[in-house]
Image 1 (cartoon, rainbow, N blue to C red):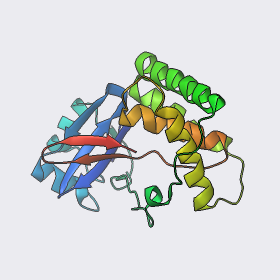
Image 2 (cartoon, rainbow, N blue to C red):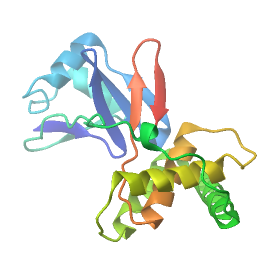
Image 3 (cartoon, helix red, strand yellow):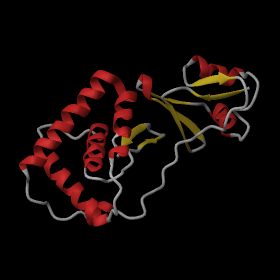
Length: 196
């Protein structure tokens, strides 16, 4: 018997503590020090019912399943090897088609976030990648597309918001054949979340 992450729940470790992103309920939660230690042990999830973990089940973060469970699947993200922003070309000329495309992406992404919630909006962003056609990708080509997006985005009358803009940029790059990854990160103290 063992425990697994509930649907739409993701977990990461920072400074020895486990943080949960419950995308289905639009919330973040932090496990305490002793609970985090138990969660991070290799056999932490493969055990009989445990009152510490049962509290996380009651909170909707874990589920208890008969049989053996896998270890806690923590989100992992490699740090970028190169700074893409340092390679962005000078501001490209404004293209009205780009501005209209970015405005449409803003409307779709914003509508999805507001009407369907965080988890379904993330699913939409995730589903953009399979539509990408396979091709050789150069960093210079990607930097040029990001510069085009940023130029068009700067003309929209809305303040930047990291989640919305990350979803829009993911859809923009996917439509142009680039497979990108949306990342949500946290800072423990003081707590803050950011998306890129």
